[in-house]
Length: 325
Ligand code: UDP
Image (cartoon, rainbow, N blue to C red):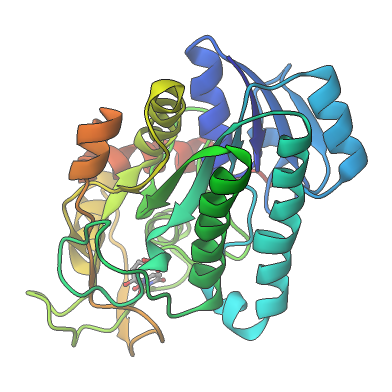
């Protein structure tokens, strides 16, 4: 299948492209390199350097490459920034993304896999979180993801667009080629590994007074390879099954302290630790139920043992100590 991947040079996009190509699909990428990296594409893959609302470039892509489906990952994704600058988030994640849907409709492309987020849930009502929990985002980032899910629903109703929205939990890990590199980096695992390698500062854990067994927050880490494969399973599902929304998580939670301890073991480094006050907006526990994705998409997390996730991220870190810089 020929697939347009937006956000193709980002963390998840790069691995989605890698696996699509490995599994015999053909890919055309679209990235504005705001968060993406030139080095995060498979050599020889055609990547358009443009926004998802660049009509001229979209016309060129849909005319010259005739993709049968779109995997839409391009987005702004910093929660904190979304709170201080919601306009940027509604602009990129909703308004610009609408232009992509418009072009899909114009060119008769009827299948889309959309990168949504656990952030649509807000504070969980119970754990593990199922897709039945009503969305209640607590920041603009989550709101924009939720808004786009709703837009997809109405586009299906009006224009027959078929969609699968994947609500990722905590993406982590790397392939031998592509890994996690954000500027600024705010995520737990890449920060711990950077501290392990550079030994230039303490690792800060934000709060140890949560209502969890060791007092630190619990999250559901899912290997980026498993996340990427979920998109491919979703495309397959769209061939004959209905549209839908799915959690993509491991189904098991690990506390920040467990992540820290495992990282110490795997890296063999002494990682200086400092416990600091809580970070605003962090729920104590976020763990997915992944039953629905298992039942409907045939997806399950095959690489999401914590040790495999951290080992793969550490191998990538040692190979690329400064990421893509
Ligand atoms: N965290 C931390 N120190 C850091 C970065 C993150 O203690 O330097 C914690 C954060 O407060 C949360 C967990 O690690 O409890 C996962 O955070 P991350 O930003 O990786 O993902 P999120 O769950 O916020 O999407």
